[in-house]
Length: 233
Image 1 (cartoon, rainbow, N blue to C red):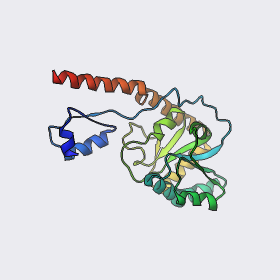
Image 2: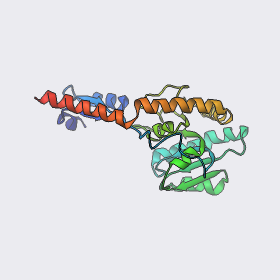
Image 3: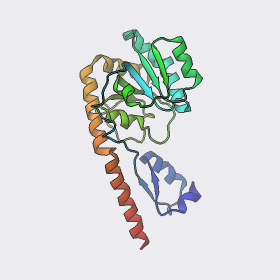
Image 4: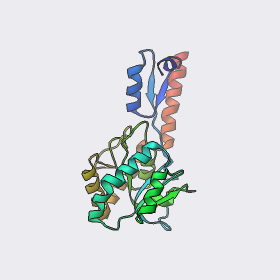
């Protein structure tokens, strides 16, 4: 990475965290800009129909990835039982392609867990959920599932690792909890309080529109390109 960064006029990262890590290993000759991942706020929208699917909690993504597998197993073993003490019939949906055998086994042993496998369109599953969970313990980059869920007006609860690199505000546009008991308590609160879900979801939508809309991010990228080109003249 140190050698590669020297070869370019500008290196782009998707988060300030990634930029900081690269700056530690690269010398002063390397130049960096942060261009975040974005979301199509016209494709992911709160107006998307919720008909056809209904669940309480959803975790979505590529379900063969070790980060997602670890996060879901952690959630199921350490957090889900605490939620069930308060809401015994709570439903969990694990949606995404190539689910690991460990995840498939959860659906086999627990009727309240659904593993969908690959789906043609993730939006109906997210739209039909009450709360989007991101219980990740292994990080890197940014999680696109969070700005996508926010753009759809969904309340999101995540670990600190799960939302690292995103410009979120805890208790405003997202709920952040790292302790299993705290994560469970906040999730129960969201499930029981529709008003709170709507408030978090509305604030998340505003964040998606003002910070993660691809149209705005493209303008940022274009500005960086112009800056680099001018520097070469």
